[in-house]
Length: 377
Image 1 (tube, rainbow, N blue to C red):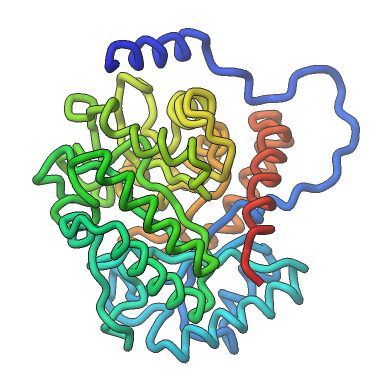
Image 2: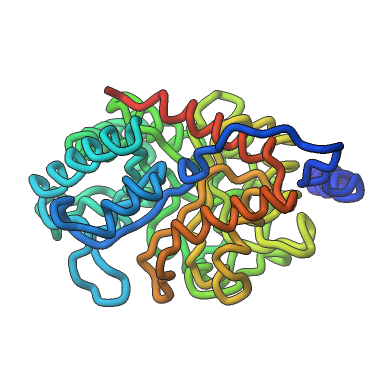
């Protein structure tokens, strides 16, 4: 099976990249594209009132979504969430502002995997949650679904409508520092991962919350953490095993969105990590596995990206690869002043110079609009 998959990927690579620029003849005037709808951005602050950064993002740039964090990575101080009452007020005010300024609701996202990666945690007044590893080790998918329903209800009460979870990485490497040793995986058996991820998504959907499969095509074999720097899984990845959860859950229609990881595998793409790779996103995920929905990048300010690419460059590479939503957390060691406006300007300039296809951007906008239309009232 590994040989067959490798051969298929090689054939796709040999086929060459489709042109990313419109080159046929003079252009007619095109209607403006709401490019900022493709941005999912982080911000500082716990309330809307008096927050000029937030008002600029929502009303001036008109970003399509925001992501919430409990703590600031650099300072370890509260960032967006300090209590259940406060975060519910923050998100309600955000949605009112977005409807007033942009005429549509925001996608409001958070990482709510359970266990260590849980933004609505006991530290800010919520009950503790079980980790994916604890759920997988327990072996009871009914318990996983019930836990996800509870977690989803918590998200909905907080005004968060998009969960950047579950992790469907298979624990190929038991010492993997990014997901396995942190208890973020459901286990080393791909069938077990599928069963618990399916139950987790069912619980999210019962609460009206969108879910995300991550980190495509698999982060569970890596020896390093892509938050910190370049992550090469060429010699450790087992694609036959690691793609199975995606193959199965996509076929079952359970993938609301998929997040590629910042992992490099030269057998898939000898130049770019998965999150910026057309061979991995457009060909393997979309063409080979048949995925038609939203692809959301992992944070473009993680070390694996910032140490090798500029923000604007990585954003354009991601869009050309087939990514729809560009995640810019502004909650990492390296933050970028004016990141959202800069990325929008870079995309607009690339469109003018034919370095990025309007067709690509329109398709991304259509997928994002379809996802937004599924938000629970």
